[in-house]
Length: 159
Image 1 (tube, one colour):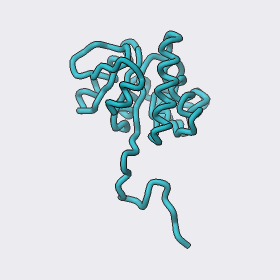
Image 2 (cartoon, one colour):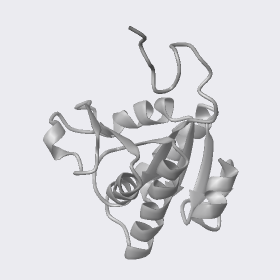
Image 3 (cartoon, helix red, strand yellow):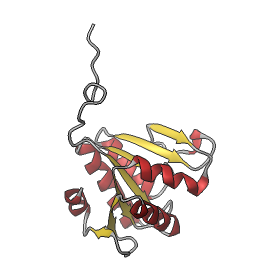
Image 4 (cartoon, helix red, strand yellow):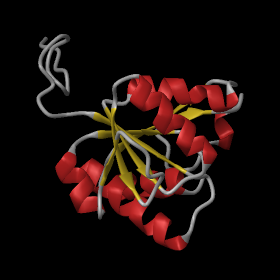
């Protein structure tokens, strides 16, 4: 019997498949929700995997968009129970680490896209830049190192 691996045999080149981190506020405007939804959908259509903090706002909207296109979502949760993840998370990872879980999100993602956000998002951006990760921003913090994108399509072209 032949064993088939969806991404090829272990150790094989994964081509252009990436894990894309979506970071942003647990509470956000309707415009940010729509932006995150489209971003998640585009990630899934590109056959990439989405990783986020697994909660509401930007995270939930991005996951909802990814699921609408058949994508895979991973939630790195701040609490100690997977039942608190948003309903669009396929793989909930329970950390009980609060904001410290951001390090796991950053290290897991190949590239990150920040949508809107407040201080938690700022900390993720800072950590990602310190770890030499590419960070693309859509209507988020304007700091050195963040690649500004005017739209979701523009952000995806930068990935």
